[in-house]
Image (cartoon, rainbow, N blue to C red):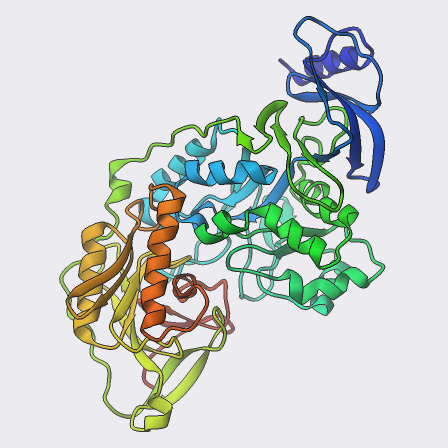
Length: 529
């Protein structure tokens, strides 16, 4: 059906000439444009689109018209997560969708190039094909972050434009005749957020697994300013977060608990996001001509989805999911991406001054010069290796300080925004065991003591994703984290901390198989001074 024909049908439904498919009555409607909660409202739906929004009244009815009494519950537009990573859940797309549906999210904007470094165009195509025809709606962007795998720095546009920008010089990239502005990636203060808003930038606050930014910016909500360019997103949620707290629904509940008004909080996850991505003609509001994405909650102050509708289809009701994700299939070669030739661990110098990567928070690192002959400076120092896992055999051995590991070694192929296997440890034998096991299981995370594999999390899909149920994934990851804590690592969720050591999304010193990378000056630095 053409757009003109569709609009004509919706007009006839609104005029009472054609019966709607679904009529929702007796609701308290949240108007995303005015931030009002309006009582005794109806929504008429035809072919998955909204034909009428307004006071309760009688439409034309056919034999198949379904009438749903909202029973004075609040009607919200379906939530939009404007920046997320499905694979933060370490599970496949189907598991991600299963756990997102109850949250009230009907649209997710993801960075769809996470398979690309390991499987090329086939990785991107497999991802985008897998997102089609699912119970919830997906849009995708490629990340503007450079994958630190060579001298080339990839920057390309697809679909909605660019994804996040990390700790790199602020810039705008011209795409054809228009400019795409970036949402800046990184924790911010209220002062910094206001400065960005004053410049006409959009601000996306992440409140998910890796990022918890609401607490740091909460004082901004005391200001009397326009928040239409202010958004709330998850940035991705890990398995434990999904299973114990939720998804964007958990982010919203934390915002409300911090004192953010419901009127503003719901704008930040609906119309604000839709307008940023120029999708407000389709989603983000409960208004005629928009897609019928609807979430009901008991009251403005209580965000607890009672039922969720996406495109006019009920996908969740009274605690039960009513839609199953479509099965996603991947090419065989996407399960064979850990290509490590025989190699010998590079040796660390025994004396002299070297450059170390020191953890100052669970995600932020800094360059720290240490003297290997000084016992005090050497305290808390272990070796860290970055090894290209795509077959070149290139590697770099560096020094990691303050991770806390006192025995054995841990390694991962899940490091974000890099193609490197990264391993850190206290002895060569444990390091060699970890690397050999990761190659054997096709990637994931492994902790070893000497020749013994103590705990592991297999992630054979591109070395980053497990296809097991999320509950099993969560238990395997928790086991890894438990043995690391038993052996000295004190950081919260150390698997996630370790996964960020190669990404330029966090400041300030990262590791690659070419050397250390400093996100401030964008230089590659050696171990020796």
